[in-house]
Image 1 (cartoon, rainbow, N blue to C red):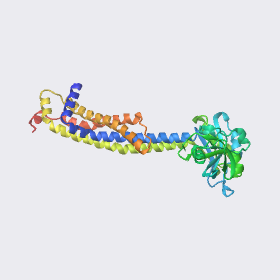
Image 2 (image 1 turned 60 degrees about the vertical axis):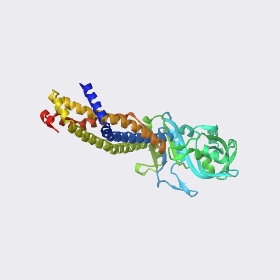
Image 3 (image 1 turned 90 degrees about the vertical axis):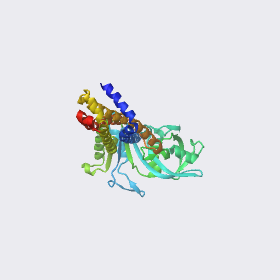
Image 4 (image 1 turned 90 degrees about the horizontal axis):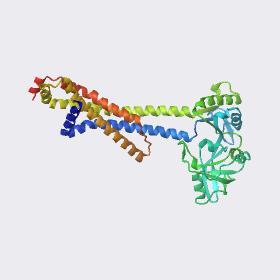
Length: 405
C-alpha cells in the first residue's frame, strides 16, 4: 500500500511540476542556509583552533599584569617578570610534565645589511623556542645552547626579513647590524606565516636572550615566559604551581595583588569555542526561520491540493478507501516534498559554503551534524505541516465530496 501511495504521489508531482518546485523551494533555501552558515561557523572554529595551536601546544603564558610592578628601563616599560622567575620555574616545576620552558622578550629595531635596511621585530629567546613553536630552519642552524650561554652575537632570520635584506644572496655567514650592533647570520627559518593570527614569524629576527638583554634591552626583564605542557590534563596543575612559585618569588600573599598573569591556552580556546558555537547556533536559528516559512508554504499548497482533489477523494472513499489511507496519501506527498527539498538544500548548502570559501577567504568545514540535523528537520517539517491538510482530506464526507464542484 505504501509503495502504491508513493507512486501516486510521484504521478501527482509530475502533473504539477511547477507547483511542486515552488513548494520545495522554501525548504531548499532554509536547509541550504542552515548548512552554509553552520559550515562557515565550524570552519571559523577550526581556524581559531589552528591559530592557537600554532602558538604552541598546551601552552601556559606568564606575563606581567598591566599597571603592577612596572617601572622604566631606558625610557621603556619594565616588566615584573625577570630571568630570576624563569630560573625559578626551571628549578621548581616538575619537568616530567613539561615539553619546554622558554623566556621571551622583543623589540622593534632598525636592521641593516649594506645599503638595505628594514624595521622589524627582534626576539630574544632560548634555543628551546624551536620546540615550543615546532618551527623549522630552512638553511643554516638555530643558535645553540653554547651560543645562548656565551651571549654570542648571532641571528636567525625569518624568511621575509632574509628576502628583504639579501634578495637572492645567501644570508648565511653574512654580517648585519641590529640597532647598530654587528651580528652574524647563522640561519634562516622556513616560511611560517601568521603566528596565531597575531604576529608574522617571517618578519622576525631571533637572537640569544642573553645577547638581547646585554646589547639591546639592558636589564634582565622578560616580556613573557612560555610553558608548554606534555598534555592538556596537567595544565591546570601546572598553572597553580606556576602561580605558587611566582607569588613566593615576588613575596605576594594575596592573589588579588599578583603582578603577573598566567594565561591558560585551553581556557581561552574553550571560551572562544563556546562563543563561536553560540554565534553559529544563533545564525542557524535565523536561517531556520526559512524552514518555518517553507513549512507554511507546504501546508498552504497541500490545502490547495486537497481542495482541488475533493472529487478524487470522494470517489476513493465511495469505493471503500478508509480515512487513514487518505491521510497517509497526503501525508506521504508532504513528506516526499520536504525530504526532497532537504536533500537538494543540503547539496546546495555544501556548494555555497565552498563557493563562499573560495571567494571570501573564509574557512568552511562541512560536518555530519548540520547535514543530519537539516535532513531530520526537513522531514519533520513535512510531517508537521502536512498533517493538517492530510487530516482534513481524510475527514471529508464522501457524499459531500462527490457533490463538490
